Length: 297
Image 1 (cartoon, one colour):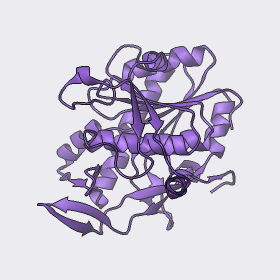
Image 2 (cartoon, one colour):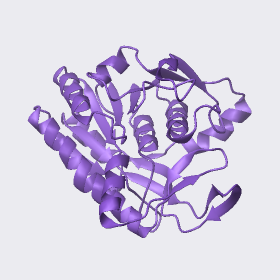
Image 3 (cartoon, rainbow, N blue to C red):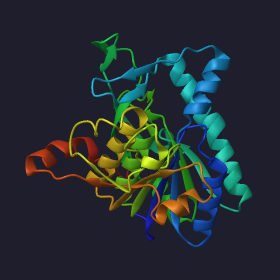
Image 4 (spheres, rainbow, N blue to C red):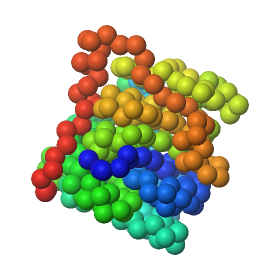
């Protein structure tokens, strides 16, 4: 646990998200003495690198319409190269230029993020639900907080991305929004801000003026029908953070100037937990209550 209130920020991978503006805002907040951990994705960079290397990309759409990246061995290599070799050095370099001491990490470093590889994933193909068994992705099950806590207590801004490490010690792809949620819960963060390529959760996905000031995520199952695709997964991550004890979760626009400050001032969508019975709470906890571990890997 850090000695100062912690804000975990997720810099979305959508190409329209302004990473430089996020870094500038992080620098200002860090300069004011705030404790910040930054998680990033990189869907645009992954797609671009895959195209240059000739690695086909495929999206898996679950029966509940939540979409995820299909990760075969070649795609996993692209993910690691794009995030750890492309996006992360740029973010760390920009923070350094702004006077912020930061350290780039993946979930492999210090065994920080542990995951169980999914033996099979349900995906809808041509209207039929099939089982995909060769997908190298995992579900987060443990966060080892040693490295992040040490860096935060020393005044650094950790910059974290997938992959995680599975039971056999192999890297697996994990969703970066859920990484942010898991770290926020394990580190007892005060707030989680998910910055994305939209002004928040939209009542109408085709109308950016329909942003909701608040959204009540259901305690189990897929979020409301209008929140398909990537937004549905962000709402799942928000629910996991809330269930893990994070007091405040907000989804906000990462394309605007001062995106973090605007979100902290109330822009975007505040995500809260919907009504739930004790039974539903018991069902929700196993997927969101990430164990922490302070020993070395």
